[in-house]
Length: 420
Image (cartoon, rainbow, N blue to C red; front, side, top):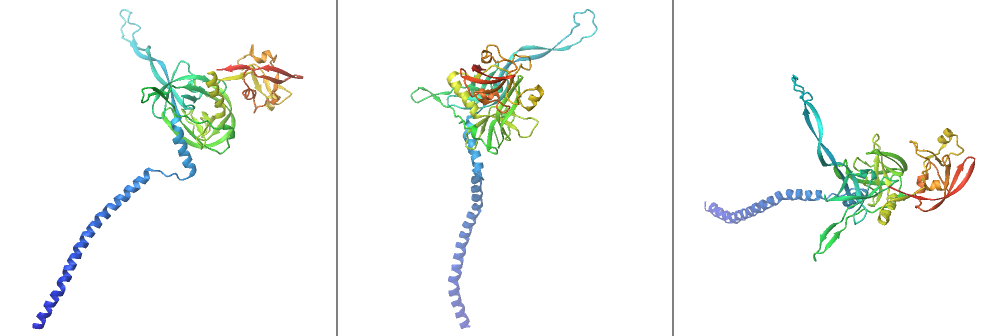
């Protein structure tokens, strides 16, 4: 018994510290475990929060995608919406009884009639355009601003509105130049300063390639401002006949074809390369087709912009003839000696073949003449007389090679001026 009691006391002395240490470690482990649990409980939230932050900053997947994003970001501030407003009649309906003055007429008839009750200004159309100078020159399509009785306003990407004045319309291209006034600010000295507009840079449209990536920005459907579409150049040097409102019909040569979506309202907006340069001005689309749109080359607009700055208008050299371009089919139909050139002939409505008082009349060009060359440049279906004349200025003297059956003549003409 004594030995058992002694052993029991020794065991108690040994176990007491062990139990105490175990309890202490248990408490520490519990506290540490609870702290770790709380931190681990927060950790997934922090991971999710980090993931959410990363998602807000999109990382482009390809270099081309990055370039498209940069083009849109950099050029969008210069793209504008053009709103067309006009006074339109306000109509009201009323009722009359045409038999009210007939005594004893048994019925009360009320016949609806319509009459005008003043006018109100309404938005009647719209298009796109883009700023081409810091002082507020805006380039757009001519067919967007055809109505001389309408008022035009320009809305910027920031949502600001400016009244716009039509400075010039191009007589050959579907182009027009508008002007808006810079915003005036007051500096720290109380003086007025002009805030320059963001503007787009015009690129070189003579170096375009089939398959080249292009970006379109415009006021799609007149409602969705700065809509973006991307495609490629699918054709070059096309000739189209475009029709628009107000009986507007125009044949345009050397246009760019693209499969980038050009919707109604995109007219006048920029066609851009991946360097962010304007290489074309969107002008038309084929309604019956899928993804066939057209843009006027930027180099054709450069000339007009410079003339507006210098002259206040856009002018071209004019010869003063109406003509039909000859090809093999025309040659056979009219029994001609050549399958190229421009046959001087009356207009479709019987207009004179040679405009009275024009350079052509002064140079003694006649109806029935075939203009073969101008300054030794051959006139063909692909290189029309109008296209050749655009290389010259009013007042230039040109040598014109003519077939006047059976003879070939060379006549000199001093070119006149044509403007809108």
